[in-house]
Image (cartoon, rainbow, N blue to C red; front, side, top):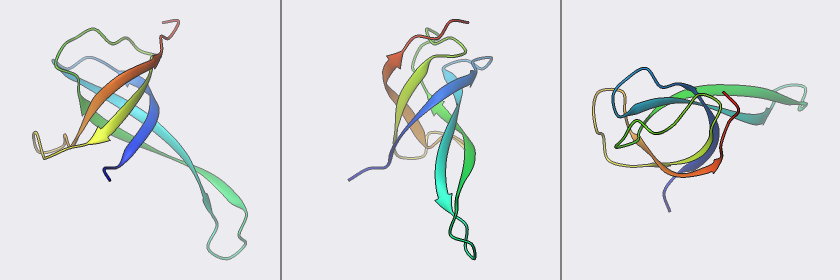
Length: 81
């Protein structure tokens, strides 16, 4: 099963690429409290239709370029921006 994440588009300045901010919760190694962590992932879109603030689902794929290893599967919710 491939890795899938849901996140918010934070940049769409590149051609056919968006930067998606994925937030997840991970337990602290010593104190075991859940701590929020985030990761910015470059994802392939195939078009320039996404806007900043859109909530999208991304899935892992073969390496497309040096930094791109994910592609956008669906738009969950359109953003206000």
